[in-house]
Length: 552
Image (tube, rainbow, N blue to C red):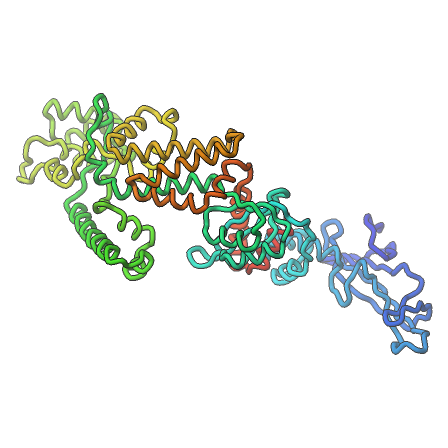
């Protein structure tokens, strides 16, 4: 049988042994002499012969093993302490190895792509079987590549264990490659890495103060660039924090002339049962007590983190309650999809005609194709009932209206949605969204926040599209004028955001002037998350680093 591929340093015999589960390829080494590894003298005197049986790349659809005839030579140098030595095919095999170098490299490459357990399963189908521990050992033995010294880098954090431990990913922005993974996200670690890479001239980062301090300590000569996406996100978060505190007051703003309070379809969910209303009231009382306790502790000077630990709350919840002017009550539930929606107009028409018998109405719409039960019909009729039922119970509409908060006829969207509307240009809003923003702008503070948010968004987005002002002094004047105006805003969240920009003004100016950002680092973090999930969250930092760097 002829072998369709060459084996380094070996001559292949013409006969291949076939076995049930593998092939055996007998080979001999090409060299006529052997060199003593101790003294380097060549020898032709054969002492003995023996065979090695390493695994090799599969031939066709069968596992392949080599049967290498190895000669042992006499060392004829009288001054050498060795009397015999064995010849070794260095390009093909490592000393005492049970697999060829090329097979080990192929198995390691599969391990880089699939991990230990996944790689072992795939290798079994490729006729190169190896255990998952062996696959990981082969990956760990692969040498790290020699990369050119980075000039522009992007850094971002990634979760080793979400909510507990975080690391730092470093990306070469010019080569679009991951350079390194750091064990934490502290300033000393980042500064130490930058000191080892003294050629770095630009660092793109988010607005973390630790990264800013680490870049200043480790690479004081490098220019720092704040990420534009993070600037916009931080602004939206500041607007959202202010809206959480002022939402109760803004809900009382009247509707503008010409706008409708209710859309043509249902504007809220069906009425809840008495048990559900009582459970909701108890939950509100419990959270009201927590809100009062947070406000009391915050007024006493206790830090937000200490309050969160003492009460067992998330820091975001504590921050929201501490800044809220009034208890941020949960908004009424909106109208979700219902099987009854296509028949609402017909039911309303029949009720206006005087029919308030829910079962009769259910039978009528069932004949029209309604597939549901009569429960939703009973709830719908109960909200609009004008005559008491025979059991003497009160009309459901009276109980529902008593439980609804003021302003439910014209509800505002949640703070998260409102924040998104306030940072958008007015030209991209539809009629309904523009009406909501116009209603908010009746409040002086809301009008000021909206103007500041739109102006800042326009500055940053123009920079992202390459429309920055060519004169750096004009760009600096624009952002400094915005900061000066925002610091005097009555919304404390916006003033705090402006103070943070002023403390990081050099990186913010660079963000408006330079095309670089940490977007590449964000994308590599997504890839790192995928690799972590492939490893079921049990991969160490060294394995993750190798899979990120070597696979690229």
